[in-house]
Length: 291
Image 1 (cartoon, one colour):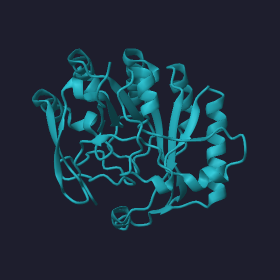
Image 2 (image 1 turned 180 degrees about the horizontal axis):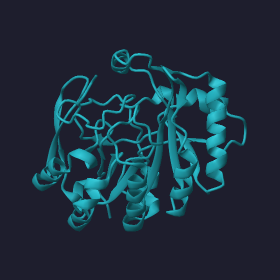
Image 3 (image 1 turned 180 degrees about the vertical axis):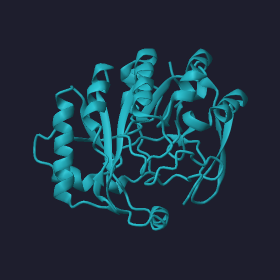
Image 4 (image 1 turned 90 degrees about the vertical axis):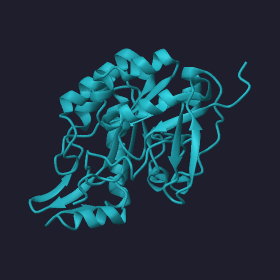
């Protein structure tokens, strides 16, 4: 019987560890601990990583290619770790996501994860939905949504999490250097129409739609929309997959006022030490090319 609570490791909201930093991650696994730095107060703490201390590891990525190709997941499972995957697959858009693999490659990675680990251990994130203006006109990044949904359904995916782009000062500084480019925050009713469209298409594929930190939009949806508030790290889901041992306590470090439903996890990414090479224009991570 489990006599202590185990930790859920988040790897990571702050950068793409599966895409760029798996050698570093495996070194932390080898030494059975990792030092984390709080990005706000810079306090450090040491987190034990031995399998007996870790309930599960939640990997976040836009490119699981290196993770798959180098066999990291199989090695981690042999060591006794239980894995979950938050896989962001958005439409192809060079202005927004210049350095991620082609969509076909990412869909192939999704198939591999679902085949090897089971679709119940994978959540597809279409995140964020973006509206923007360029010198050639108004744009959005929903063009490939239906195709991605149809393919994901064939692989057994049953959860899609989405949100609308958030404003950050660092992103405003980045986009100000691009002549004629401007992100647009659509009115509430347009967001409602977008989520209604997404939910209807997903329902036809037996995929449930969840929103991340979209409390106001969720409240404005009509009754029966089927859209639910997300917990991107969901202890109830992890417990169903891998057994008890988690705390079910809410993560107070996340944006609860905006509707975040995440349970407690330890995020081991580091903005300073782990810049992200994807250079996504809308992202709060630390890009390698800030301009």
